[in-house]
Image (cartoon, rainbow, N blue to C red):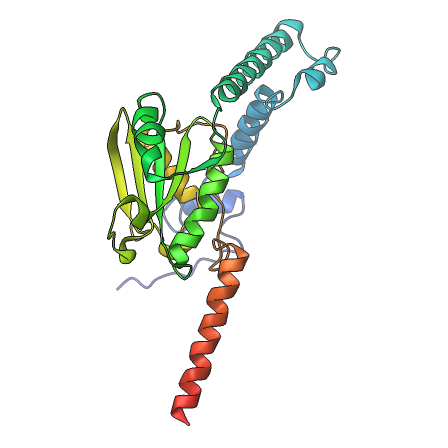
Length: 260
């Protein structure tokens, strides 16, 4: 019976003639390929990309400062691209400025509604906010503040506001706030309370998403806010948030008194 032979191996990964013999006879496994070529290839590719994109994000003044370092034709191509972007941005700002004719919230009376809303919507998007008649409706108070900010930011959209029971007699308080969006004389979207959004955590970004969804603004509109992380209380204006916290503390004290 053949007995296994223990072959001395100091370092199976070493590049020695003895290890080559052992690998040839299958006594030790083949040496794994060195990662060095892969790493070097990745670094070379990273350097190549960094060189190709070295002018990304530079303005015209910064490009002018590189005239002695860069190839003229290559630098000119980037300079022309920067000019086109700048021109496009100026055109966009000019268009926004010329079409921003509202920039405020229009408080309506019932006789104004056909002219200020229905007729106006034949030329522009018109958003109507029907608010609570009571000051304790947190969603309504929140949306009133967001409405003002939206009106200042998107002057090409008309933002109107009216107390719900003055617009529609007997309109249920529980259905406020209500948003009505008009275009071409018709209601194209309505939203009863903020339950479709985030309730009292609704933000201006949520309303901007609504404006994009109905086509009132473009998805690439430069006025749009960038997404950002939000904490639990960041979406409520401070006056509303403090009021809600105060009521919560009152409820806790009441519960404690009841338990006594």
